[in-house]
Image (cartoon, rainbow, N blue to C red; front, side):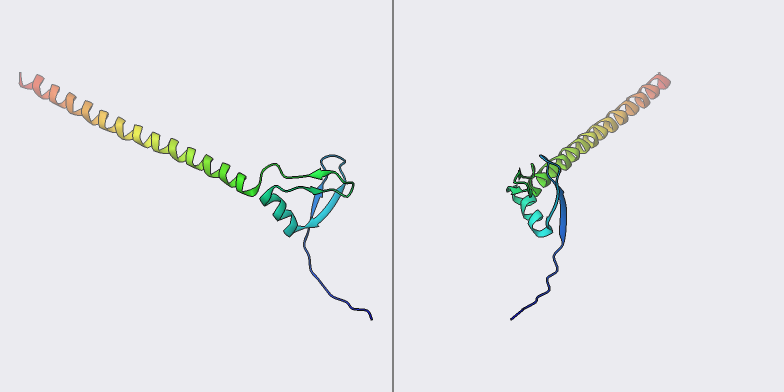
Length: 103
């Protein structure tokens, strides 16, 4: 008795970093390997793995964002400090002009 079934699988192309052979794997399996960094093999038996997991890439990106936010905040603090200094200088100048004019 013959049985048939229909399955739809999305395949993703990969290239072996050792021998250059092009092969495919289910996208869901590629996602697992990218997420956990586990090994898989090309058709010629060469071990492969992704050097950074998705979580590691996310942590690096978050760290870069935090670093940029820290730089922006430092510039904002510096700007506020400079604005205060400018106001103080303006007030000193006005007081000097007033005192010089009144003398």
